[in-house]
Image (tube, rainbow over all chains, first blue to last red; front, side):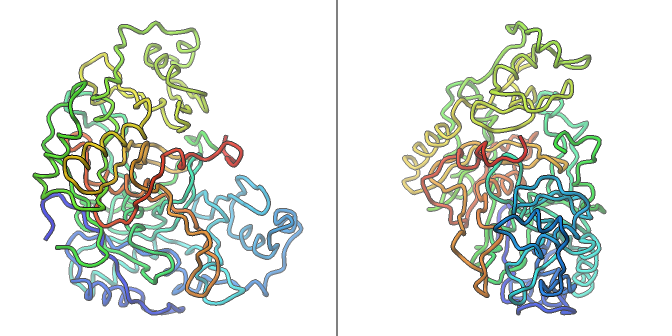
Length: 250
Length: 250
């Protein structure tokens, strides 16, 4: 029993290898039952890869005809077909240093390879794409979990993103349901009444990062419960995307 | 009692208003005792503001003579003296849109205002600067905590940074002691033997972000214990700074 104010991150393990059309919500519900059950206000964080698999967001490299641009961006070391899939998933290439491509996805996220990834794919020669609408994915999972458990929970679909200026990835929220992804402290003040400097906290990203600490990419723990964070709301991961006109780094 | 694999984030509350030369390690030790005590392998995350205060990293605006460049960058809405302090803390101004300044600090961190901040300062007309050497700050706190508690713990000094492309801040590690800030999975593979895409995870930043979920900027909780993450090592926060030659966003 954690004390007052404690946040707990509980791994959801034991899920099978996921396939298209699997009932991921039910599988998560069972995993949560094995972990002691969901509680009111919990946030369930699910790795994007798990969501993409059940949504059939998989491409076979053998089916891909690379464009001239893909061949160019792939350089000597990359696979032009892989780069072609990245380009199809991209609204805009933000930076390219062959074979590395940083792109803006259809959702507005800026990340390596537009989120296209060969690791943890169902088989060799396959690539996993980001969900078409991760907020909708989160909403559907939430509806299923709320229906099964009969209590209010939030859902975050997460992925590992690199950052400008810093090494290493951290997990961030691609889609949310039942939570407010930004904690807005504008108008609040410090203990002496001065306005705070950091007034908008991306708690959905911090929740995703906290979950990653137990997610273990190679160990079949595709989800976690984050318990003890008051994040309820009716938000969208679009709130986490910096509007172009405010973005100093585009 | 959390189950296997659970990560807990435990707030360290009840610290007094901090002043220069306060024994922060002792105060944290007492706060940890009130929270049930430290355990072997715990990571203690401390907000930069607390560290800076006990290290006397405070400037009075009244003592600052702004340069012509500071006047220019302050624009109509900024305080040129505040901008002057930011410039003195900066190695390089990365972006400026008056009065907003994104700068590289002496440590190599790229962040708003070079980390210079008026909120939660000891009094009006004062600014708090980042520690001169946050890794050294973390090392000193760790030595004190290990000496008092007699067990092995890690320390992270954290601050809230904005990000390129994404809205809102997340807490990241400015200084570390007794931990490896990057979990390096290069050479490891997924369940099917393919190399993983995200092979370097910035777990120190995820630990800092997880701690922020309980830190509460205005509620005098300047620190937290993160329990259950195996992060032991002998690293430095410098490992979290992207080397210039690999940085596509400078």
